[in-house]
Image 1: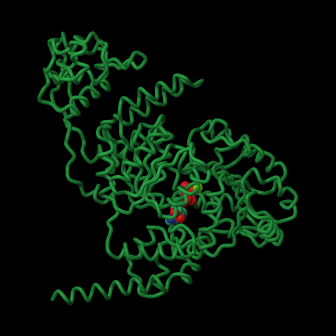
Image 2: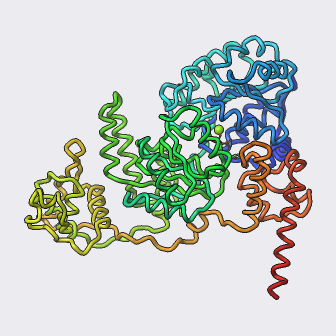
Image 3: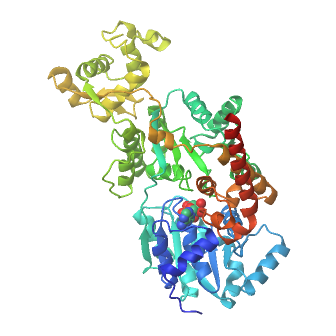
Length: 605
Ligand code: ADP
Ligand code: MG
């Protein structure tokens, strides 16, 4: 085996030639250098952080084959497609392949032709003796948290990986995951028997994701409006129940969008089909339960909407992390409602781990209710201290201003008191606004003293004030007792001791700020032409569009307007293989576009 003294300088040409990139993403180089010096490594990087490259590049720099253990066939297939498109010899193995294909792969492995070989943990057993015969450069364990029952995607077959180190003590093991919590990290190292592994923890910040939270009113209408502004963009809508995924997908189709539902109650075949339709850009919008996403490396998901509140911050971050993997702006939108909180609490009450889960849900609520930079709150949760406001969330865009809300608060608290602290938020708001509905009349609430005391404020706004008072600890919500709203000692000070209260002024949705506008990719004519060309090629080659080129590469072509092969190679994501395959067609499209533009200017003169 060659002794490896690869340096940063040697790696850059490899990075450019094979992957078309000019620089590393945070932590990639550090991980790669450790792997090349034969150390065991545990790499923790966020979704979209570029984990695959951490083993794909060393695989090319070292002699022998890198064995990649990956949990899902879809994941293996996508990565192998991408590698092949880059001219790298790679294969994956699974039990559903034909015996002929499997035999062929065995032969390739034996002859040492493969730089990378992907296999599911369930199939490892078939390779016990072959692995002893061939030269292996590295074991890469992708989605390594699957080995831990502490993690959220435990896969029993992963536990077999514990014996790899024992059987191949000389070969470095690289474990990769996006799971940040310390218990799971320790468990991964234990189970893989790599106690001395170097740990690399990349920042979890994803600055390109715009973070937004809105109250959950008229969600469907808001969603229709949101995606109406984003034609052709891929996005995912997460919701809590299977029934809702189907209902919402149907509503969206009725509104003229191309959307499909996805949940664990569908047949395997239906699910695979839906996933493929999404990955291949045939269906841009998926409405799914959290069952959707794990097997998807699609780089151009431009937005993620949470129709319901997720039950913890880990889940939320993982789900929004599926957007913007290509580093281009992506928009994430969370709808927040107390109804969801109440429902999640009901689910949790049946869990064995209820105490922990309640605490996690509370952290999720705090994030949704934040009145200061959301990214600071989010990264804090993962133990990172960001000190500057991010400038790319709804709060930074519209920082709250306050008014003297003492009188408003007194009215609200007085209504709660007169309702004997036994009614939920909706009824409190209805009473204050003097609503005339069945619930009010059945309970005779129209005769209480504060009925109609706040007529001039809209239902939504009044509800927001009540939520602010909950956050300030003036009111409390009793989830175990019909979500009734009650007063705290603080409320009594406000009612009887003239204590003052500040409330945040609610601002109406303003026209988009510069940053928000930047948060959606500008669609230009050329970009659309390049996209269409990419789609054509992808369909012909039967691969997902991003295997041909990611959105980031198309954007870069548009910015650089390459006119020859030399300039085409400068484009991010263009390496040697893609230069040979695609330079001609894309250069032609760009040149034609340029010519048509000139023509147009000419015609206008
Ligand atoms: P992860 O597995 O950590 O979620 P991936 O390995 O799927 O992330 O990479 C996410 C995206 O980042 C992919 O589109 C990949 O091509 C891109 N990428 C990886 N490394 C680089 C780099 N050095 N420069 C630019 N883009 C990169
Ligand atoms: Mg990955």
